[in-house]
Length: 304
Image (tube, rainbow, N blue to C red; front, side, top):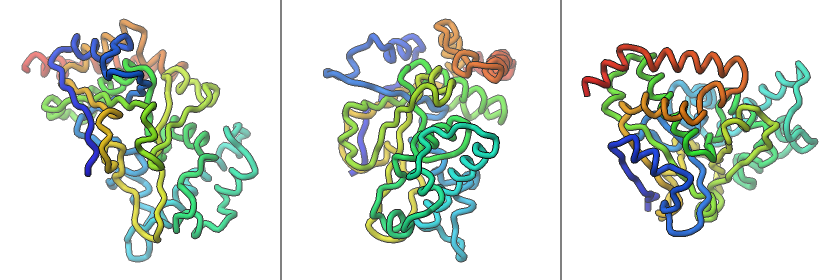
């Protein structure tokens, strides 16, 4: 049975914002602890960047055998090598590796029975000793199995709306106006419904100032196969088999509302310069302001 989840669509910005308010206790009729993820297209699944099935995915281009086919062994091996490359570069310039330990180094150096442990599924992948470095790498733009979430619903609104505007500006893609943005909400109190398939990952704020500012956390799709072969591409939380109707929600609104949503976020202090503390965030803020003033974007809104 395919996973079922709540969906709600909103026509007004005001209704959308009110529904996501932390003061709104009627999402469910019981105690909940939600994390949120904003996406520029409501049709996108909850698949982490490293597992998206497309030619832009470096793992998809590299983790192949001589016949050009994918298999579980190659996939996980290259995931380990991606992490090792990141760690090696940090070591070269003396950066501190979060979660560093003897066991951690053994994993990324493959000093274990790799085939039996991971390829044949005796151990769950990824090992939890790698979560901290994966979180740091993910936050720096390195694709991993982790999926970014936030504990602040309006931070997720910022990322959904700013991404939708960015897509239009870069691609001049008018089709975005026929689409909706989405805010996903996952009740972490019900993680046990996913059994061994899902891990909620919280990392110390000192791991990254960006993560701390964004109230960031992650989910990770765990993988354990009892037989050799197969791959994990296009596996998302919303595609896990089961009936978890109360754990996952999706709230949607027209992408044409993105500028108004960004202005709301700015009014309450959520903007690139606060979510990415430093000069990089200031530059992002500048680009957002320019994008919001782009006549092609504004004129298209008035047409609708």
